[in-house]
Amino acid sequence: MKNTYKIEVDCANCANLMEEAAKKTAGVKDATVNFMTQKMTVEFDDGTNDRAVMKNVFKACRKVEPDCEIEF
Image 1 (cartoon, helix red, strand yellow):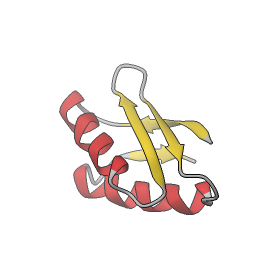
Image 2 (cartoon, one colour):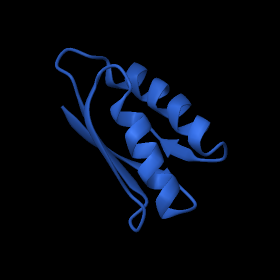
Image 3 (tube, one colour):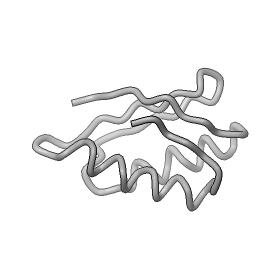
């Protein structure tokens, strides 16, 4: 399953770091963060609870940029 989320990120470098953090999160098959459109696309492993995984993605992204926001 693949979902797209609205994200608030301040710079392109932070977007790249957040993308890498999301990719390392358990339950995430692939992730991309587009700084220009302020969107994150996440592809989940089969059988995972996307909401629970997104909570962990959000925590990982907050370590990169403490004031980031993800609407999920």
